[in-house]
Length: 601
Image 1 (cartoon, rainbow, N blue to C red):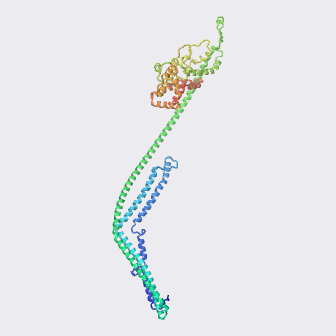
Image 2 (image 1 turned 90 degrees about the vertical axis):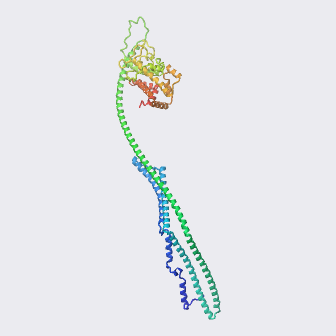
Image 3 (image 1 turned 180 degrees about the vertical axis):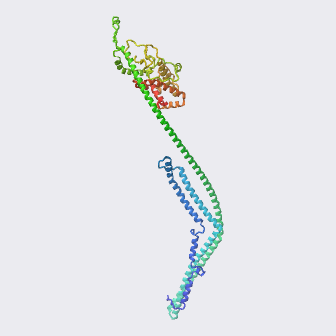
């Protein structure tokens, strides 16, 4: 291509034409050169940050806040609940202890609070969006927004037109360059250069082709402008229909939101009532717990006072018992002295030589007086043997079958006059032998001058105490009145085993009753102690709590047994006798019944 001559007369004009061609169409219409900036600002105005209606932005903020609160409040609740439980436990008991206190109610309340807060945020966001839509409908802001949208489309179309015009300007400048080249070629032709003519032809052909291309580009551009214009017209035509449809949708949404809001209000009111009821229940429970604790404290104080009084009473009773034990020891010492003297008197005749009587030596040869010689050493020697005889008598008492008592139970109870409350005799009132005797056959009516080999056992049986013991042995066969009282006690004790058997397990069989009446007075006691001790004790306790008559009969049985055992505690060797007596079937029944009735407490 021939270089352009700046001194050519058309150069300045061509330069002016070039500057006029590249001016954009927006500048030709008199727009602000900063139209692009105004278009950008207009588009930014349509965005959320520069939205003149703040409701959508506020709706998004409310939704984000509700999501945060729906997560934060339950978490704080679950963290604060153990702290509150520990503080409450410290206030009540005064001791710090780790107590989580979680329950199904706490978890449900936390979950319900989170769900309700999320629901409230969702409803508020919908309400704000609804408010924005309503405001757009009322103020016509939607039309203005669409009107703002149309100039934006026109501005974009103008930008494309400017780009097309720029390309046309470039093509025009190229054409002008070709024209200048053609001018140069004409000058070369004028100079007679053949080569310039060929070059001119080529340039003309290229110019024609470029012009045709430019025309085709202009046609395509015109078609695009027509399409954009038609689209804008169609968009304006469908705007009213879309606005009507949107209005109907907004109305339906408003109705739905109103119903949802009403339901939410009802739910919140129900939740408030439930929370008030729960709070009232918790307050009542706290008050009841406080009252219970107060009453428990009062009862503990009363029990402490009672225990203190019982301790004082126990101390007094202990002092009384110590005094009574000292008296019993003194009485036992006196009784032992009397028994020793009486034993010396009884044993003294046994020291005589046993010789057949002869008529020659009977009258002139009297027996030397051995009684006053050594009475006390003999008594002291015989005291261990006497204890042995006591055990033999106790064994006989357990196996004895008293002949005077072989009568029906009812007849025996009717015939024997039982005092209402027999007073407990003094320890020295009943000696050891009559207490443990079960039959009168054990008392010999008289003492033979020449006793049999078993005679040493017989004299010690009545325990002849002249002054302390009212039951002084005699040579007569009739028993003393105190012996009758002891017999009555033994009969009542033996009859109680039949009463207990009948009361707990029903009436006995005829065979067992016949055996009992025939003399086996401990058959029912043995049968009762052969049972399970715990079960029998439980049944006795239950029957004592239900039956007042049976309870009175049981107390009478325990008093009778105490009356029999009381004199033994004051005698020498009484502990062995009591132990032997308590190991008998009736004694074991006495221990079992007394423990069930609380007699030993």
